[in-house]
Amino acid sequence: KLQGELQAARSGLQAAEATAAGQLAAARSDFEAQLSSQREAADAAAASLTAAAVKLQGELQAAQSAANAASTAAAGGESELQAAQARAAEFEGQLAAARADFDAQLSSQR
Image: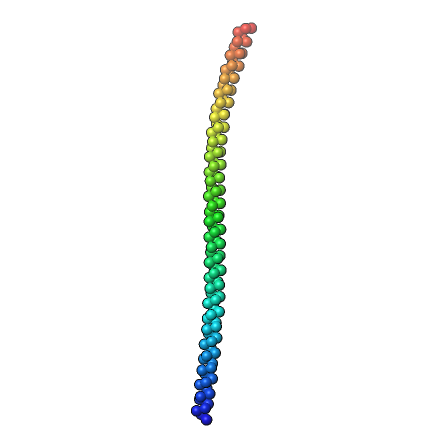
């Protein structure tokens, strides 16, 4: 009788071990599938972030180029403004000289 109970206990233990091994294998397979899915999602997110960073870098370089061009144009415009102001001052000097000459001629004719 004891032998039969021992045999039944062994059979139950073997069945429990087989069930546990099957459940462990299924859990491991499910875990690996989830991990693989998460890796793929992380890789896709990293690729997306990399593409966005590259795009932003290009936009930043374009903005810097535009700012440099605007700065150069502003410097050129300021240079032109200074030249125009110098010409205006020269013309004002010529006008003052002509007015003085005219006033002198007018005085001499009186």
